[in-house]
Image (cartoon, rainbow, N blue to C red; front, side, top):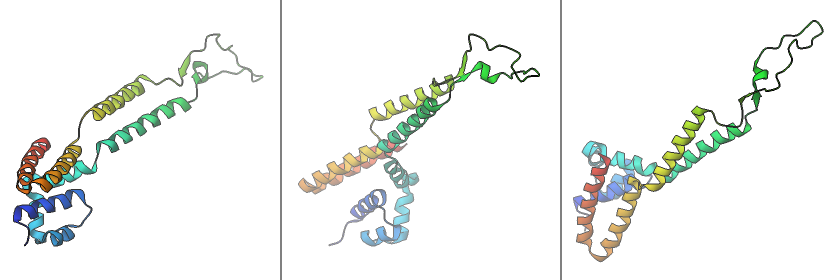
Amino acid sequence: MGLKKTEQREYAKFLYTEKSLTQKEIAEKVGVTEKTLKTWIDANEGEWKKLKKSLMTTKSQQITMLYDQLARINEEIECRPIVHKSMTVPVKLDKEGKPTHKAPEYDPIVLSNVPTSKEADIITKITNAIQKLEGETSIGETVQIAMTFIEYVRDVDFELAQKISELFDMFIRQLLK
């Protein structure tokens, strides 16, 4: 006995969003034409495409990239040479090649291993983004939890699992808006 149309669609959605298969492979596995599959993929303003994209960009990947950016900025600041004001001022030399002015006793630092205000702002923004990401649940994680739960319920009560799957679909669609 073959799958019902709704089951085919759910299976196709799972394969499209979770697996690295071509549309032709998905259509063959599900038992529909590529045209039908494309219609399902493009339905609801490209919901499947949005879902696949959100699953591909996981929260942990984003956090890792942000930590890498933060490390690069901090490394750049740490490795930066210390520059004193006297190093940025042209020096006039006399005929013998000696400086005409004596270096000041207090030679302020123009650039050092301390972040500039712009760098400090960037560091703060990256740190805040990391904290926000670490504290929230992404759509991808929500979908993953939903799919795991539905698989569990499917073993206990198949019809209930279908109802829950429909409700989660509506919930995810709402999150994507």
